[in-house]
Image (cartoon, rainbow, N blue to C red):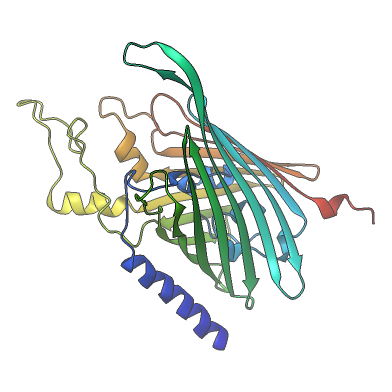
Length: 351
């Protein structure tokens, strides 16, 4: 019973912490790269978090309460072919200590390519680069068969030309698994601050996010669905682009049409919700898909919607390796490709 009280306190604490934190949406914060999904499995489900306690080390970065002894000895490598010359990825390793619990270390890198110095006439006088990096140490402990908790500390470094910044952040999470198979998590991400700013005297907030995740594998169908309620700490995620209005353009007057009343309420509610699913074909093949309504509304073109906001992926097991691939449609100009490979070092040990 004490464990239940402790986890309840943890979840309530993170909820109030989110309510008291000034939320920043839309590029008003530092280290926005921390919001991007890294693993192919997470990206295929449409968001940047998960609540599946199945020993997958790729989920440790987005939800530290999922870290457990099944990840000990596991290694995962990820690569994301983003837009243009941008690419990023991570390397992970998990280890369990008998008394301290289970840990997963993750090294993230983001390379934004090379840029030219040019004056107002267009004369090029050299080049510079831009990059981000973060080292995350996550810890998790199972309190019993139903409850687990976790936390992660992040050391963050960012460098753009001659501007650089150091920061520190913490993730806190709690998970519950019911006997009926329902699994849920509450995750407070990126609680922290800039230790040194890009410009002296000008510190920016971090991309704080309070998330609720619900998932269940169906009893008679080899399918697992995932439901995410993103940004609990901030209700209004609504953004109206005057050049791309949510209600389209009036065919008679040619004036932009904006949503109001219940239509606006429903649109704002849906911007918090991300849905996804996994379809299991045998033991070695998984098909995945997801839908992110907010991404679609913010990045779509009304005259040609395409598949913006949708994502899909596949996971296969080859020998002792788990290989995952996915694509997420951000815009009509293209879709990022996510590649992840993971394996357990212990499985190669001689018996």
